[in-house]
Image (cartoon, rainbow, N blue to C red; front, side, top):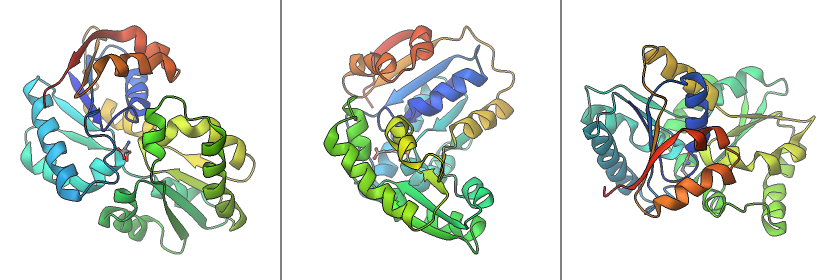
Length: 259
Ligand code: DGL
């Protein structure tokens, strides 16, 4: 069984990629809906949630855990690996490397939560993979919460997205890193703005390939158990609402997780 978790719905973009790569694997998805968003919380709080959820998923028999959240990964993956040394842990980090390598203008931008934007890990990624590339780090407070409403396409939010992205294009960026898993669900708003000028970089497919490399033997019935720390029925309803019908068809159970 493979466990995947996020603060809320964002990690479903990663789960969909994993389900595509591993159609027979048994999957568990946990949304920490009682504590979403993570991005404006202190590091200590995020680390506490990551350790508790990791332990809970390992206790349910998960043999591999995917931290489907950039904020949780950049803040707490080292602590989680130290806490659960027997379980392989795969994280999601902003795709600075593919963006920097692919950029012709040598200018890229990273959209992220406040916690990821100020994280030491993001600075390390830039140092390691984007030397000589101009990198704009753009915190997007409220965006993940807006995705959680399941109705992000409002005139006011469209204007907010445009106000963040158009100046980046004017500055010449040609790669736009989606540094939060929730932002994959904003692509219908982002793509029309950047089309022909910049490419959005989302690492979900690469993360899924890494999971496949580690669990190529994952055999099961292809079931998907949904867990949420609040309103699990809302998580189940989010799948079709976010266009994830294939995932919805795999759902075997929907439960409240007291973690
Ligand atoms: N989806 C998460 C991320 O990738 C966290 C968003 C949030 O809870 O603030 O960063």
